Length: 319
Image 1 (cartoon, rainbow, N blue to C red):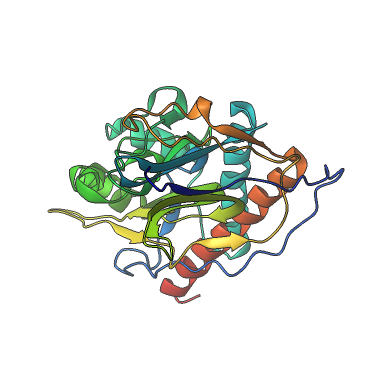
Image 2: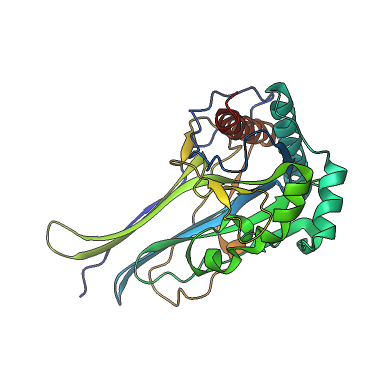
């Protein structure tokens, strides 16, 4: 008989519902410094502000034909209206922090009109869903997420939606922002588009061998609130002619906020065989959040993220 050893970490602890949300300390959020070209002495135009909410994830490990493990978890208790409200709050907070730092802003209506005139395409419904993070071969993690934009700074097609900034998709979007180069120059402004990614769990999948040499596949999913890579801030500056290469601020590393946010334990689903090519996030075990506590964590996250943006812009401006 084949020796089969599978380890699956489930969500065992049940946390009490927290009646009131409180501010939570956030570790330093460090963003890479942007190129200073085109940023000195100009106003800031917030073109798009989006939050990418990871809503489900699945870990799959495949040690051999008969030795497989899979576990999934989904975010429960957070609806689209909450996501949209938080995106609007985050956009308003960024503008407030820029104003407090004496960095001049272009008003939302002017930014919207300029973008429309320049032919910037908006994402329909100001929301983008990605239900499948890609194929997993062997061992790996797939994540589903929902991206929402602020009402006054909506999602555009200039950059990869939903926080995907790597691979061929990024190359495909490179240069799209050049349509804003001349408008930015005429306005004396730089367009910025922050895209914050919020996650609810730490997921891992691996294969190994037991002390006896048998193959083993294991998956682990633990609740964890984090600001994830990627959370880019895309920047388009003015240029009279030619290509104005965009600048970007990127997170130096994931930022984990160590605080409880669940209202009950989550249950991960696990199987040892079958086709892992298709995935329906709704089939994953739900992690029910304590909405006030989770909301407070998102608010703490976007404030810290915005503060890092403002600090970098102030630095390149010599303020």
